[in-house]
Image (cartoon, rainbow, N blue to C red; front, top):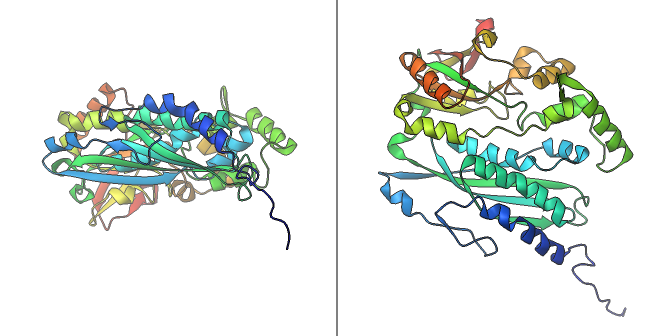
Length: 368
């Protein structure tokens, strides 16, 4: 019988000491996201959050959401830029529960990586912490999982989870949407975090391994393509997803808040497959794609990718947000008041379309 060989966990590819250093590196970032309800700090077996504030609500409803960043992470790795993808992760979760009128309370993240390096992990988690601060929610915990032999050392993936609350009488419900309602849009910051499998195909990064000469050449190429004055394709594609939480919650808490019938977060599936989620069953949305005169501008990066891919207008609207990251549906007589309130909050709202009798579908005015 062969003599037993001494093999440590580190020999197997898991560096627990470096994992500990990574936790130490992010402790202050996590602490900066704390809300008064947070009990203790990271390091325990669970994140603690007081629910005492909920007792002031008539009927508090907890709303949860989970999501990832998707294949945008491939670009982050090729470009060696990791500081903002964490904001994407937070945004995808908190913007979703915001559509019900919920305030995000706390957030947890999960990062799977081939090999943990404290400095690298700190860059990733910094983006998560920044996103939590923008959303006003606490980062109460998470997990850093080292996967040697399953992932390349520099490869990683992320998932996030958030819990929020809304008082049932104030919860937004698509059933409130009526024929004649108006759809108001708020600008996106670009592609956000959806459609990147198509983006990767168009810009030719499939099969490129980060850290190789091929990756360096592709990085230089993407940084050399200008999609707008002073804006490279690399910068535009890694612009983080916008977090709409603070202005929308302030709007909902004000006089104009009662005038909001529904909200749609425009994510994977673009306008076509997200706006319909905010419609009543007997209403269609008619979107005016020629709305530039009303302030609707399609980001140059979305135009560039759509043209390079040869997408039809319908295909583009089913893939990208087309410059509209969030949509609010209000009664026609309340459009001016809501627009004015949003403008006072520093937003740049614009009309996207109107609601007509139908069956819960999204249609386009240029096809009517």
